[in-house]
Length: 264
Image: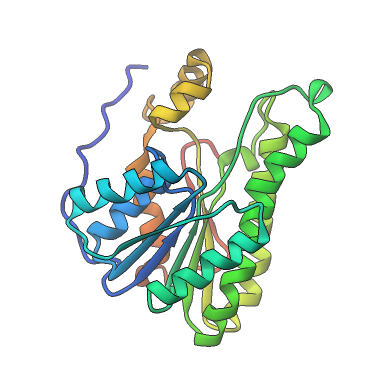
């Protein structure tokens, strides 16, 4: 199959985030988190906070966002989602600097490749701690103020690998399947307070960091499985996140929206 070229970057905004304040974890660099931050800024969010564990990359990301979007209200806060005190500090900072948080994007995650027979406890636990438990910590911390306001939206970054099997990905797949289950269960509880929780399940979204850490032949194999014969652009995944956080998704509760042709 000859890969189809991606569509041009969507420069036309539609105000899907107009008036909303947004907090995004793991938003430094060139991945889905940064792309989501840019799209929310372009879609009219009133204030934005991005977090990451890398100080220099985080500040560079904020400066780049300001330059690309012209948005004047972009804040930063360091946070390691495996540390409860840092999670609490991030949510408190967002509540303060954003004047209340309308949208949380749980984007932090950690992958790797290892066969089960060779995988250590520390490798297994690290991936689950960042990807699954980190999402749980952020959700738990943010639900307090959101439920008190009886409003808000949380979007989790899951993965199609939570549905399908792939060699050397047992820890990551287990974590992402857990994110899906966490999304569904927490969403039913949060809905009682007017808070919506949903998730996106991307397959392969290409960016520079992924090219550095994943074998080229594996990335090519995964891309060829896609309906368009190409990987997604990170902004295509960000568009789905913006939709799930917007008022257009007002009746979606506990959904895991596949942004891929790979369902199983």
